[in-house]
Length: 265
Image (cartoon, rainbow, N blue to C red):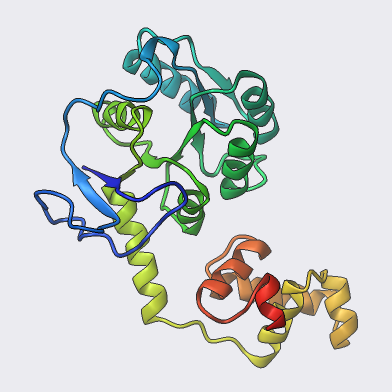
C-alpha cells in the first residue's frame, strides 16, 4: 500500500490518514492519500531517456535495485551505482540523473537529509527516493522535508516498488504507507512523552547549539571531558538521536530549543 503526497517538494505532515483505513480518494487539503495500483500518469521524462543512480553501501542491495530498475524501465539506459556519498555526488554532478535511489543510512554519508540536499544542489532536476531497510526514524522525515520525492521499504514486493518508481518518474511524491504510519507513531510518541532533561543537560544542550566542543563545554562548566561526554550520551538517548545535530533538531522540534536566528529573539 502506498501514500501519495498532494503537496509539493519539501513538505511533510504526520497527520496522515490512519494506515489501516481504505479512503476512496483524497480529502481536500489532505497531505497524504492512499494510491491504488494502476498505470502511472503520462508526464515527466520519457522512459527511453530516463537516467538514474543507485546509492547503497551494500553490494547485494545495489545489485538488487539495479536489477529491479532495469526491469521497471527496460528502455532506459543502464543506471549508475555508488557506494558512498562523495561518489554519489560526483556521479550526480557529471551525469545529472532523473532519479536517485538512496539508502537513507548508507555508510560514509554526511547524513541522509544532508545528502538529499547536496544531491538536489548538484542535480536540481533529480527525483531523490530514499530506501529504508530498518525502522524509519527522524532522518527519513527530514529527507522528505528536504525534498525527497518518496520513501520505500527495501522489503516491499518488487511489483509495488516498481509501481512507486513509475509514479515518481511521472511526477508524483510517494511514501510507503508503513513508513508513513511509523513516522506518525513517532510524532505521537514525542507528543505524549515530553523529554525530561536535568538542568545540567539543558545547559550542555544550549552549549552544543552554540557549536561548542566537549572540551569547550568542559572548560565553561569546569567539568572533565569524560563527564561532558556522559552528558552528551544521555542527551542523545533522551532525544532519540544518533548524532549531535539530530539531537539539536529533535530538541528544536519539541520546543525545547531555538536554533539559528530564532535564538536571538
